[in-house]
Amino acid sequence: MNLFYSDTFELPLPDGHRFPMAKYRRLRERLQNAPFRESLQFHLPPSTTDEQLLLVHTPEYLKSIRSGQLSALQQRRIGFPWSEKMVERSRRSTGASIAAGRAAMVGGLAANLAGGTHHSFAECGQGYCVFNDTCVAARVLQQESQVENVLIVDLDVHQGNGTAAIVRDDPSIFAFSVHCNKNYPFQKTSGDFDLALEEGTGDEEYVAAVSDALEQIDRYFEADLVFYLAGADPFAGDRLGLLNLTKPGLARRDRLVINYFRDRNVPLALAMAGGYAPDLDDIVDIHFQTIEIAVERLILERKKLDVSTTGHGEEDVGKS
Image (cartoon, rainbow, N blue to C red; front, top):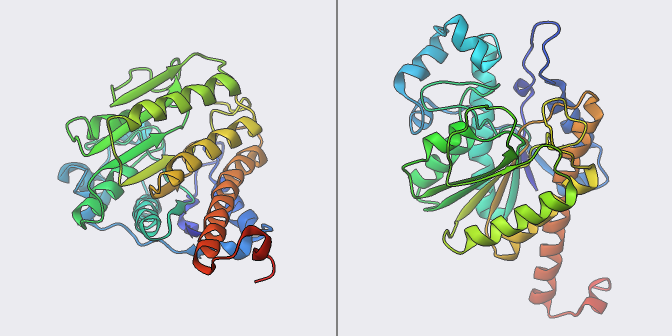
């Protein structure tokens, strides 16, 4: 499975900042030592070009990011102080989603080990999101004629308000968000399909709601590619979450989404999205199991392909 990662994902921040930047490096280190590490290929993502970013973002906003002309209020809304490293991090993270989308079109599944910056609007950033990586990636792949219709399955605990606004008048990109109704952003932006859950929603109700929603969407939107924002923040212990999912429940969620689209032979590009549990190990555990479930699915697909190609039954696979 192709994974896209850069050390620039870990942005140096002032002491006491609450964003858990170390989660990216910790996830990469754990995956490099995973029992299934031989099934993983790590790649340095390209830095997104201005031309690619302008498929989504306004020239004025891009100029302010490039030149460091963000006001103090704009920086507070983003949540990160401006620096050249912040710009490079944002370009690389967006480039990782583009690369993951391209790789998924070839191999079925791929992942950006960051990304999911769904609070970024065309003209501004907010909520730790500078550029909207999934919208940029979708538009780039459309421009390259690799896809026509793209579905964004956003299972971060917060509504993808920036994504909803960007694709509002674009019938070729469908924004589906499952989030806590009482959480940030407190003023929601209507998307194509918003599923707002009550505070404290647990595993059973959550998974059932997502399953039902996927079936509904499938009736009227046929995707050539899915970007899946596999947020760790619906976890019960998350500081910014308000939902009540367990780690096994989040694993069920990931397995549901991954199997749903791969059973239909739809390519799937993953992004890690949010995660703010007080214990960094909890965040890494959740992201790790997302990749583990994706690898398990790819291994299963390859075994089935080997059987169909060689003509061996399952009883013969271990002998061939």
